[in-house]
Image 1 (cartoon, rainbow, N blue to C red):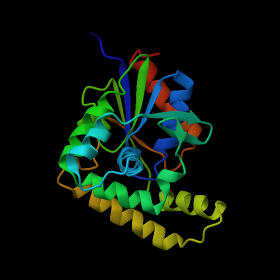
Image 2 (image 1 turned 90 degrees about the horizontal axis):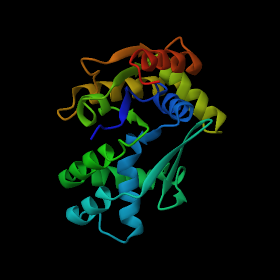
Image 3 (image 1 turned 180 degrees about the horizontal axis):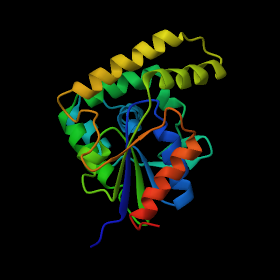
Image 4 (image 1 turned 90 degrees about the vertical axis):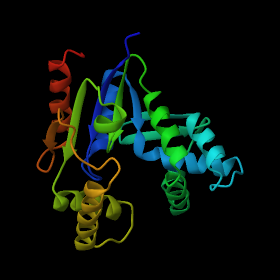
Length: 225
């Protein structure tokens, strides 16, 4: 059986992966995987079922059959869990805490690895994450590593927060991004790094439209469209 084509887009937080992936999925009519949301979704789904988040086998069973789909929208991704739109709910501090609890469970990590691979269905998949091209889909047809300077990512995050009515400190945001990059790049399991055969795109001085066009050219070159 020939597996459906996969395009992986990895990179640090704030590089524009989510928006680029959503636009590509909409343009190509392909499935979309926002891997970063899966631990939050697992924690939330287990909580909704009244399970203890310390019950590893029960939470892993939830992770293995997570009834989730990701729908591309004009400004990102809509997350649907068991038919309910939980896009905003999974971004709360409470669900973030649940995510960190379930992410520490090896059986949950193993279940979610398989659950991510289950998204590989016709006509194709756009996978957004940090280890999509290195760990989850090592045989992906096109691998992208999307990055931008810490200053640029801090500016983007600052703009988002201000537009949403939150107060923010730009220097603190940039420092936080640098710290997270350092931690993610040096962790023992699935460190944040480009796959050996990935195309690296620096979006610091590019618009989202320019990044999308660059990726589409690579997809065309690979003969996928």
